[in-house]
Structures are given as C-alpha cells and as structure tokens.
Length: 224
Image (cartoon, rainbow, N blue to C red; front, side, top):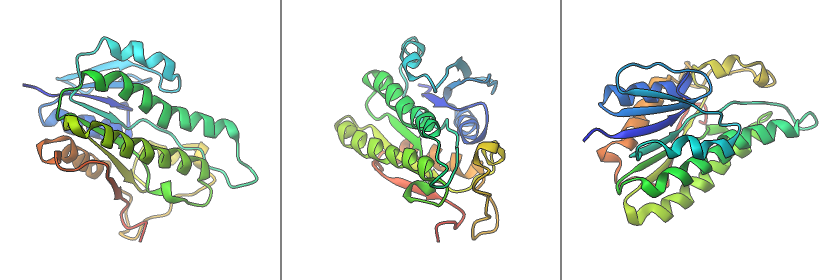
C-alpha cells in the first residue's frame, strides 16, 4: 500500500527536497505551504498558513490518515542582545513549535502503528551569537520530539529531529537574517538539501523503526 506523508514547507528548500525524495520513493505527499507547490504525480498541495496554527486543524482534518508527518517549514530572524525584537520570537515560535504541535495533535490519532514524525531543527539550537530567538525555538522542538517519542513508542511511531547547519536554500538570502552572515562550515561547502532529505527518507522508511527520540546534526563540520 502506498504510504502517505504530510510535509510542511514544500514550496522551497529542505521541505521541497524531502517531498521530492519521498515522491521518488513511491510515497504520496500532501504539501502544506502558503505558496503553491507543484511537484508532479503523487503530490497534492494544500494551502496552509503555519503562522496561524488555529487554522491548521480544519485544513488537515479532511486529509486521509498520514503515515508520516514532516515539519520542515520555517524562517529565521537574527539579532544580537540589545536589538532583539519580541515579535520575531513570537513569529518563529508560532511557525516552528506551535504549528508542529497543532499538526501532530490533529494527525497522530489516526496515524497507523509504525508511523513516523520528523521535525526540522537546527544545529544552532545549542546556541549561536545573534541567533538566540531562532535557537530557542529550534531547541523547543527537541523537547516536543523526545516527549512525543516516549508517548508514541507503544504504537511503534518514531519521532526524530534533523538539525542542519548552513544549508543551500533561499533562507540564506533572507534579509531578516542579515545580522549573522553565512560562514562556510569546515568541509568548505554549504549543506546540500538533498543530503538532509536522504537522511529524512531513511528515518521515515522501514529501517527507521529502531530510531526514536534522537537529534541528527547535519552541518558540514560547522559544529566541530
């Protein structure tokens, strides 16, 4: 039977790469994003605004049960202490954490045993100058992920976090993160979204069944 994944942020970046990888592997994918996504056969786009979590439950309630949830949507606003904008923290927490919570809360009750959840964190979740608000929201995903992993283990549903370093996506050109210029990691190249997608596909696949509650850092050596 064809597996069904709900993936957020499929209009670009890591979310798009993961959706494409799953489609190539024979999955059906429902993409949730504000901007339209068109990824070919097996893909369904549903317009959703993750900055308004209260609007999400009705959106996903009409979907077929999901075998997997991948929360990849996100954005970054950077500033150093003394110039922090509380609205930036609120916005990132809403998209990164609150939206993940609403989606999982709505989808997991009908998720079959052996299902999968993957949350996109960040290697900066342990702290980085200029990124305190972003880091805090991504660190919160670890709390969600490890707690859900414990709650869902009896059903064989795994929950893991992927934490990329500087990745070659449109986010790097967002003026909202201008306070922290991109630095190439130790391996001399930005992280390839396809590499993140490949690890996501492994965790979502049959051999991910023994891995849960873990955080995988994919940083090109940036954390060395």
